[in-house]
Image 1 (cartoon, one colour):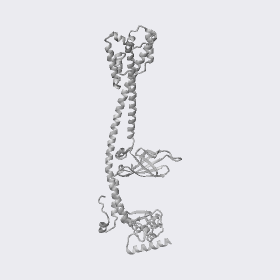
Image 2 (cartoon, rainbow, N blue to C red; image 1 turned 180 degrees about the vertical axis):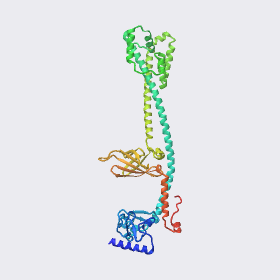
Image 3 (cartoon, one colour; image 1 turned 90 degrees about the horizontal axis):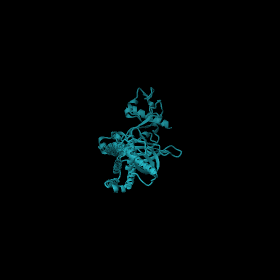
Length: 485
């Protein structure tokens, strides 16, 4: 029954069109109306060489293989219906939605059979959309200004990171040199102490005296004046076995050789550089320098001198060991920090590196009973569950893609897509889980605001305004001017 009714109505409309000289065909964009001209009683199908009787247009039967003869009915799959939508934005809808009982065009033109009543809502929708566009334009303007600030912050941060990286590289090089020098001094002084202890042991064994001690000076003097060749050879063997295998590159160490004053002076300098014990060492040296002017008293306190010499060496070695540990600890911290900064420059921060200033900025929101934490260009969490680590951008730098999160039970590893929308501040608008273990965030940020977006909004507003089909008086009374656009 319905096809017959449609055919009758369509035929009547075509007759009226031809009689009244109207040049319109239902469902066709006015700009394409010339393609639907009556050419000697025929319509030429748009995408094929077919031609059909002009009366076949919109007769609810698909005569052309491409369906172009039925722009105003639902007869042909894949064809479209043009909604003029005067007062809003013209649009094309699938022809299958024509006369389906749902008002798809805001002017109601798609339900022309009248199965449902579709009031023309285009003017109201257009006015509402214009107000929305106005708000969006204001947001984009503010966002663009904020983006400039963010870009400047990113530049400053990049410069600061580069400077810090250079500083760390120089500091590490200097600390490595000092660490090698300190290690050589440590090895040398430790060797001196071991030789003293070995010499004392050898002398005590040969004399049967296990209670005496030898000072640095005693060791050197005995080594230079000893006539006991066998004992000396034995000592040299012991010294050789106890000597660490290292090169004396330090001029100071080479110059000192086995001079006791130089050894103690080196020890004092080491202590002065690294600890407060240099005061004690200097007082001791001054004291024994003073005693050396009184031979009897000096001889009486020789044992104490020898003990103090050994104690000074041991204290010096301890000081150097502490300094080595501090140097190595500082080197490790600086190397870790340098590696962290270098990783910053391995990430794509978008156009003009504007996202650098937002690196590691964390946003939080509670949704549907879960607490979400999003750290931009880093990681995403749902409570304590990792929803992914930053992996890459989409081609337009408007989506952050996070991968390799905590695996789901009997499912894939969690992943997240963060959709970025122009806004003044960084805010999470919405969180969803459209598929198992796949999450989506919608986040506002000024970093994606662009002049192109502003142009699109203004073009849309211009299209709506140009589609108001009123007289000048009606326009001035009904349509807001919106000079801000």
